[in-house]
Image (cartoon, rainbow, N blue to C red; front, side, top):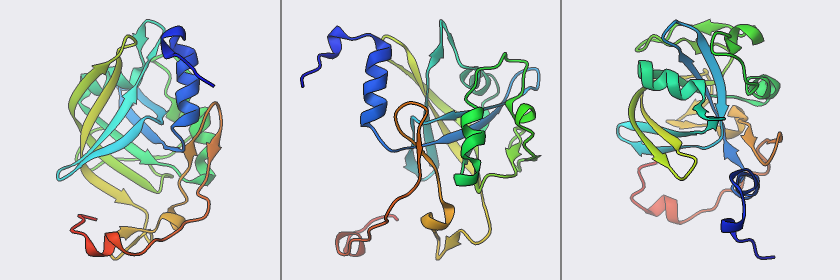
Length: 205
């Protein structure tokens, strides 16, 4: 099969790409509006881009002609929290993707407990095994859809006790969820450890 993207609209290309680039980690993001409404939304265009200082990037699209609330909030306040959700939170992550008016807090709608952050004003979720307090650093726009790639610096990590061993996160114990195509999610399958290159290289891991 050959598919020419020039012949497709943005929605059909999106469906193809989200089925091909899998599995994708999910950034579960809390942000505050100028009026103080606590927003919560998941983003599966998500990765890290720097280790020193630690920096994370999320891709935020638009809803219709306007950008999603998360993009507005981050650019307005320059602070947000990225969480990593585990399997028991799968339904809550999915439910938080429902579009609400800006004055509605998804956190309140879902009845999720929050804790104050240490370095920023945006609260973090108490139920998430990992929360990373972030400060905005850069925003780039791409393509005809002008999707925004938002880069922030992690200024504080909050990791559930017992998940870090010898400086590394125990991934199986973390039990993170990932996104695949459509309203579908995945868990970790078999974890395979290969020996050799990482033990002898000058890796920063």
